[in-house]
Length: 556
Image 1: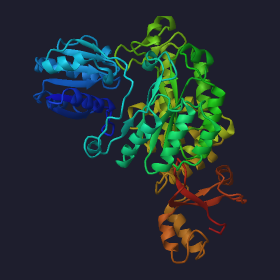
Image 2: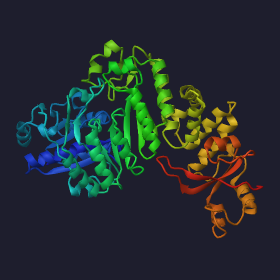
Image 3: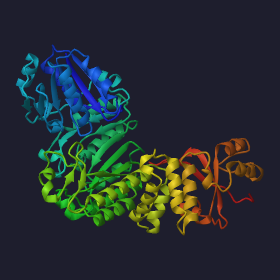
Image 4: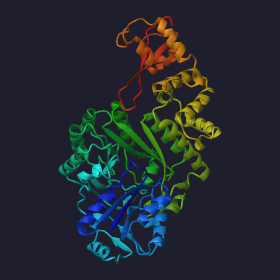
């Protein structure tokens, strides 16, 4: 029996490579029974080892990635001691970087579809060599079967590739080693996606490195998905400067939340982009991101990388400010990973790169950022990711952009407070973040407006009451006043029959005139402020909030 093992980041993930492997083994060695096991790197190590070692299999297969490298390395060394006769086959992008391996390990380099016939022959005879290299295959049909969706893939994300390769040659990416992009025929993509859609998965993530590298092809597939699969979400990695007017016209018709876009900007510094061979029209990219955001139907996830060559504190600060002012839904600020067998690893000395010796090989310093500078920027990025990448404080971030305040400077002050509160050592809850932000805005001249914005954001995210330190008038007192003062009917809000339920279900907040005007809640004059009702119904759009309504002016 052959044992196929995946070690994913979390339970909801799946491993596309193992399904390809299963099909190839069944095709070439149909007489060999297969065992398919899925674990996560968060599972207890000892229990995982026992579950693998107790199976009386002749060979075990692992797909090795940056995120599971250390876990796999530990497993194979212990398995080698426990089962001296067990063949251990290692594939995947990080297999070659595992270092010194037990004698019974075999490295498989390349794409499984191009495996030499000798690999299967030797596997069947139990006489594997230490290394096999695959040829580059021409086709890579989807490996899934109908029974997978109710079995190994139930309640998991599905991964699908409509192409292999990348049109870019970024020096920090493993994809730069393979030239060109191989695209599946569009009709085959439609056929394979139809089978996946029928399984009604939680999400289908297309792992194409740049899905829209051929705009017309992307347009055709998007048209098909909009027509055929409005109930399923799809995730795409896209290049933001490769959009056409026809694509924008089509994307304007996408139902909210059907598509998610991951957008790799990486840097806004031209010398940096040139050094890592990342070609991009930054001005066009930013314009297109703004147009996509204006649709308010597609979740946009924008990436920057800290620690790239020629990136200084000043240039990275400028990039953070530029991306923040675009106001994407999610800003991912990742560290450069100096992966083995990439061009940037070969030029590490030239760029003064100091990086971790074990996966994921995070950068520690560069010629342009010493370790202290990079550490400070990393914590600032952690601060931005924690506070920004949710829907909790969107009015505050909108204020920063609209007022012209520099986002980097704001978050530098926020970082100072986070360190005082030991934020990075604690659970990063909404409550803790609100407490820190409240302390920060107390030091500002515009604190009254910002406190109102924080109150508003807290309640429209679904909380029933404000924290005590933000409460001016309790919900109970506001409801009692409204119970006496509200009329029996307010059009589009309640009738005399639903009045009691309205008072019970809604939350209420008093906001200043300045806050009401900034939030755009009404075009009427509320010189003394206004009373806002937060309703159970949610707004439309990517970021959903409880609907806010300004109550008519009554003597409350």
